[in-house]
Image (cartoon, rainbow, N blue to C red; front, side, top):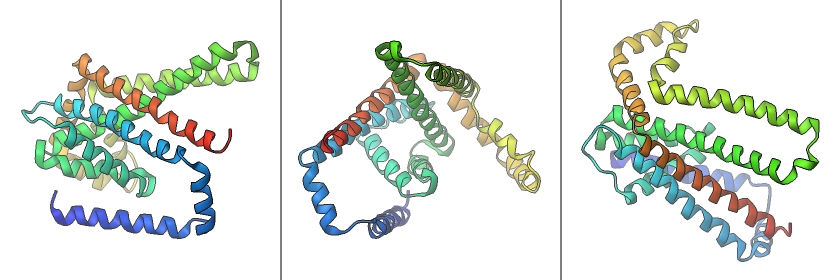
Amino acid sequence: MRPLYRNLFLLFGVVAIGIMLYTFDTDYDMLRDNIARAGLYLPAVLGVWIFVYLFNALAFQIIVNNGRHDKHLSLRHAYKLTVSGFAFSYTTPFGFGGGPYRVMELASYIGTPRAMSSVVLYSMMHILSHFCLWTTALLLFIAFYAEKMTPFFWTLFGIFAVVLAIVLYFFNAGYRNGLIVKLYSILLKIPYVRVPARKFYEKNIEAMEKVDNNIAYLHSCPKAFFASLFYEYIARVINSLEYYFILISFGT
């Protein structure tokens, strides 16, 4: 990525943080008292993210290095892209900024189609790890509180199981066959959008198919696939410590 673009990203992040701090509904004294009350738990909360991002970076590194290219993304570089990518996602509407940023950074390294497929794959793995964590929480809840379960809770868990099965089915289909072309084909059926969408589709169909092929390639390597998912899952488990330390700091 060009230095100008990096500086623009940095400027956007600084301005966004400044706006958030300015619009906080609190004053300096209240902020100081809350930080003092948190005590040693504040460094613990922040320190959790060092390890969360480490496992995120390991998952991202596996995905990038498992592609059809002769490049090797170092853990240091993967960690840098992980932290900066998430930072940009947190300061953009709907959290969409991190993905394009990572694509732009990786494009000059492994090419745009492979960079795009790697970023899409990582986003899918990141979402899938959340469902794995929620499933673990569901099983633990049932194991520890089965005698207290009411029909209402069993109904909720049944709905979650159905939703989980549907999500896993679509994720499996996406990993096995790719999903960029299928998702984009939806735009071809929307009025007022389908005409420009079709022009873009016909112009870039070859590149989109390459992205899908690269996505499907990871599914053909079970060792890399499950290693990446495992690291993302561990990151989610460590992330839960953040809430634990926050609750303790509030006396819960």
